[in-house]
Image 1 (spheres, rainbow, N blue to C red):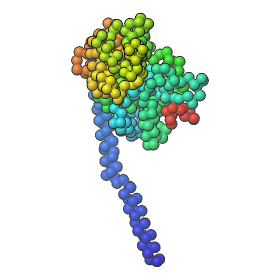
Image 2 (cartoon, one colour; image 1 turned 30 degrees about the vertical axis):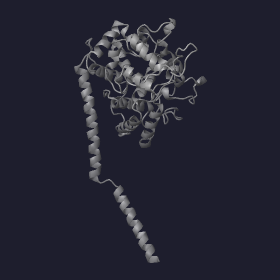
Image 3 (tube, rainbow, N blue to C red; image 1 turned 90 degrees about the vertical axis):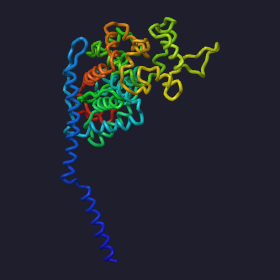
Image 4 (tube, rainbow, N blue to C red; image 1 turned 45 degrees about the horizontal axis):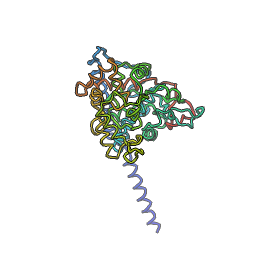
Length: 402
């Protein structure tokens, strides 16, 4: 019996030693991992270099060359020492999410835009009503933000980052990186994301109510709001080109069909044939008035019905509704902008000339300018250094400020 026990003990010891040996990384394995990391970084730096070379070599129709960016304390590959795998984690997790939701790109674009437009790219839009704001006045409750998508997906990516590097990567950087990767997955242009953002401890309800551009804003209001953030007419036009992906809720466009701005008439800027197609796409076929006319439009986000397919063919994007091109601008030339704010780009020659320019080629000019403007947007009003904090959960400020 004792002999048998000794044999079992020796066997267990041998198994343990083997498992330890197998878990060790031999020098050649470490070298291989380091080589792979260097190659990845070199590849990213090459893409970054190409981007900057393109910036230097190309200019806008007005002759303005933009070969440098205001970094405001941000750095390229900021996490290279504290969390070298951070951007890789964001990229792989975003790819997994995109496989399940290939329309998430527009949701994240809109989320980033709404965050950066109010006090800068500081993840303030994520804070929920548990953060102690007086009267629960938080950005997420502001009317323009109630239909935002992507909040949960960013939380998922942040959890993956914290599993690898607890408390290192901010929610603001997570959103900026994930949005860029989602754009690339949707066929959009690559652009460098500088990192080092920190998260706000405050949320700004009043500003979100007043200063986020609305679907029915006229061109004067739109240009005013963008100019306050440092964007000129050209940048405004190409940033609105983000509307070429995703789906739009009928709620955002139904006022253009019947009583636009209290006139009792449809929006005169809509192509008549397009107006009829939109009415058909958004009507509730199961609801009619006593006189047999179609009842008011539903606010459903058409996604799975036959009318949803019609809606996608009407949209500014190509039939898949999930890729970047210049159909958005071509449709504006034909009076087929889905939102009033979109079609208004043709109401001012200062913006209409850029619409014509973007519609005139294969989309190369739009993609180049869009990537340039996204770098600028992502760097807007950031908190760096000791300002702000790095949240553990994006919806709540961290208990201990750093």
